[in-house]
Length: 234
Ligand SMILES: [Zn+2]
Ligand SMILES: [Zn+2]
Image (cartoon, rainbow, N blue to C red; front, top):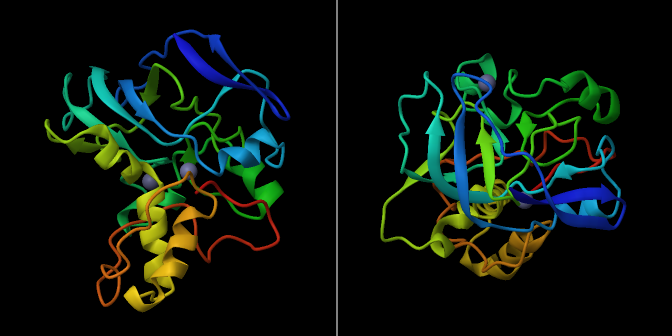
């Protein structure tokens, strides 16, 4: 398949790479129909995030069609359209069971590397360095999605990709930030800034929604991250 690869600081290339395979019974393979470039990809592009390796496949905001499932996948079937959230979560660890999927304890096999560099580790994240799991990303024709029953959101036919792609990252990230800051329509210009910071260009989320509502989205951002350490993807 073809994929966007990180080849070094300020150097990316579209290259032929091996197709992903099912490695675990809970994996699915997704044929990607839409993908995005995040502002956080600039952290990789500009060499600010350590543990990138030449040839790593970029991309953590993508959606597509399920083309293969592992034998333990029960919620998804071939042909389903899905948006894939960038945090990879097992669904069963202590963090996941408390709804803290962005700090899943099972999806980052290189957590020790992240702890050494950043002080703590988030979950594994697609296309975002080896200290965050070394998972090939979604700026590609296909991607392997671990724990496929947990993260991916099924999308009904008839809804165009452009209306749901940003559920992979930017919309929940902006929503969570707006919620944490208690933003309202009166402060909506700040909300727009929040949505754009570290993210690809996008309309601002509806700032009226978080005000007074419970938190319903999660991402690897927020106050848990040490301010003096490298920023996580958003
Ligand atoms: Zn977990
Ligand atoms: Zn992002």
